[in-house]
Image (cartoon, rainbow, N blue to C red):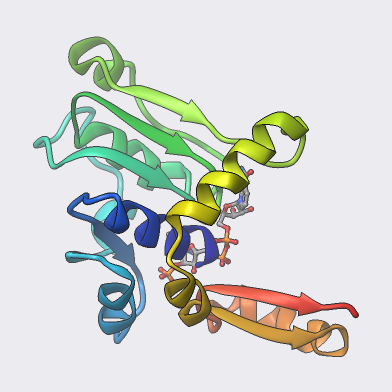
Length: 169
Ligand SMILES: NC(=O)c1ccc[n+]([C@@H]2O[C@H](COP(=O)([O-])OP(=O)(O)OC[C@H]3O[C@@H](n4cnc5c(N)ncnc54)[C@H](OP(=O)(O)O)[C@@H]3O)[C@@H](O)[C@H]2O)c1
């Protein structure tokens, strides 16, 4: 999706080894083009897992919530951090305190809706510096306002990729 595509591009540009999760066959080339080093089948993360698993990543950006976020937390290395920004799988979070008290993992909430201007400007300035414009273009599709109605079912069915910008001018 849009959040995941931007996250992959930003983290890869910052030099991280990025593991991207997707439920779609055939998206490996797209995600590797954005900078992913490894692709994970999202089914591996969406089933209920153990309170703590093998430590697999230093940090996570989660747009999915529910058991996926619980598994991301359970497999985060000691003192790592996970940003929770979405609920594509669900609003629930069936986790335990184990990752927090046994590994010092932090869960960070993200809210871009009521963020004050000063914080927004700092974030936009970083995006302007750190997001590769060619990669941004490769993940973006532009549509007119008239096309939005038709696009809704496509989004819900998981048939669109990356970001969709609606031209209202
Ligand atoms: N907190 C904030 O400030 C903030 C800001 C923006 C967006 N959001 C939220 O972040 C989430 C992602 O936004 P987006 O614009 O990137 O949406 P999007 O373009 O619709 O992408 C969502 C992606 O999640 C994956 N997905 C869908 N259903 C899933 C499921 N059941 N289990 C696991 N993965 C699933 C799909 O990836 P694959 O098809 O590749 O598997 C899909 O492309 C949304 O919940 C949105 O409301 C929050």
